[in-house]
Image 1 (tube, helix red, strand yellow):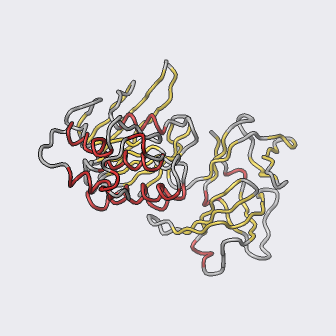
Image 2 (image 1 turned 180 degrees about the vertical axis):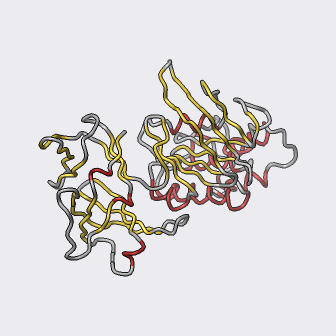
Image 3 (image 1 turned 90 degrees about the horizontal axis):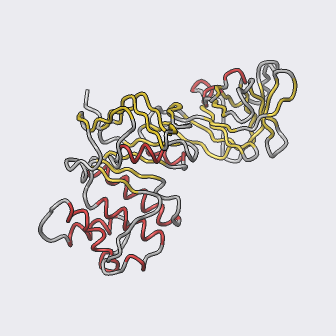
Length: 341
């Protein structure tokens, strides 16, 4: 079995004695694309900084290519690179920004070709941009220059922390495509933290969920936030903005987070009925259909008010069910199947 590029074991990290990340075990396969999802404050950025070896975990260990690695280790500093949401550029020309990593790595010779190739890879004309100063760039251009400064190294690992959150749509698409080309052309391992779950599920080999600093599952999942109200004895729900109610099992607290597996929701066929004593039904609209590349499962994103639920459509129902974007559907689920965090 091929050796993973990362092996994380019994990792714990604290800020000012407050735990922010606790991961028992996580492995990342070589040349894979791993997605990280979770709400703000769930530990995604902390995890990326730890596996970028920017700082040392409070407890536990991180193996890189089977060996312990430490912050700013000379052996790996040019193999692993992190692109953050806010681009950091030095106060110098675009060319010097992109070439800086080659200089630090001690590479000699003419840097013009690799720098130009990296700029072209992110959709920036090298002849036009090389001489520009760092403060003559738009936000999207600055982020693409920052990415080019990492791609010029042809890194073993490219870590991306919300790389497209603060840029225009055109820059966003160029950043995404350039990142994926790093995997296809050089075998680079990608670890991507993003709120764009659909993009992650489209491109990643696996997607893991972080919640309150802990792993909360992988693949597609429905994470539903409170507050929850009490309707009657042991009857709790969430008021949706289209006047519907999402009924749940008894939550551990009013602001607890509910997890509902897409396989535990089904789209009702025409005329189909359910046992209303144990099953809840909500009405929604199909907004997306997606075939998951790793499993071959078909998923539907269904909007219910402002909430979107992901539904895995059972293979046995594909032959008898026709779905299109914009179609109204009824969803059935058992509140007893909800997990709480």
